[in-house]
Length: 420
Image 1 (tube, one colour):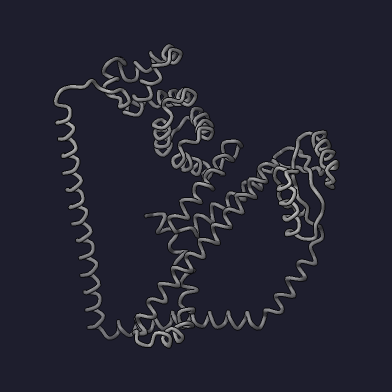
Image 2: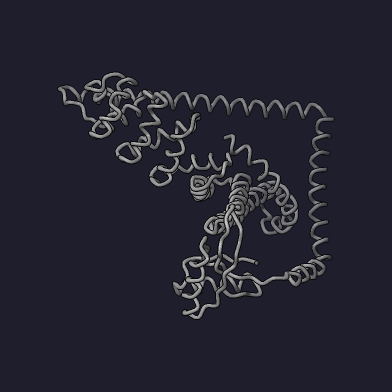
């Protein structure tokens, strides 16, 4: 809820900026097209439709921008230029946090951006707190990613302070990977260091003790933490089946009935709460309406305020339209001048090496295939890189098309366009 409230103001401001002028612009046509419908109803439907359409287009634009920033950041990361990769990931996070509000698109993009940030954070020495949070969010959403889980657990085992969110992610990983010997070995040290005695911890302890090597190493520490680990612990963990006893089906039936009664009671309580909230809102609206009807000054101020807001937005819309109409030619000329002033051509970068011999060897391979390539020395991330670049182009579009062609022919594995 807090996330939605934090972002809804940006959405509301942008949608209002476009919706109100567009509504007044299309209202005459709508009223003529639907003559039997009240203008007020037509206006409300038009506003609702524009809000949905503008919000959808805003999300699509933000989604495309975030994906481009992630791809570019990964390209910089592969080239070893970490500061530029970090800037790209930060921009992507800001766009995601500001514009993406629709649940389905936001969740899908969250997985991609948090995954990219997690890999960047765990494979570098970057200390950005947003990246740390993004890594934990990714692991909570994708606990099956063993590689990221292993790197994160290795970092967590060296930490002196473990936050509540880290504890939550740790519990999710323990539930998922308690049978994974490598990850269990990392988690057991963290759980014992935190002195965890909850159900998930006991489940992990019991499974670890089934391995002879782990049992020899950790049996004493586990016993110090939770006591003797014999039948008592075996009865507590869920993955060890209890002995069948007569009358078990009746007990299960009673438990199911109890759970159903609790569920029905919770639904009734939730319905009563929602009903009370709706009643309160209806009464509040009724009282506010009655108050406005009794006070003419309040009516005047509300009407004046509404008309002022509409006038401001309408004036802004008219001024923006007229300005665009009269200055479009000037803007086009300025764009042409900016493009002419670009002093250096575009090229595509296909590889980066710390050893110059490897770069030269790769160039020889490309030249045998008829590809014009050069080596350029670049400093980044505290290291000196020898990057391999192919051909030169007048614009970015031509460079991208050529790179895609080489990639389709399997001459190169990947590339990104660079304006050297």
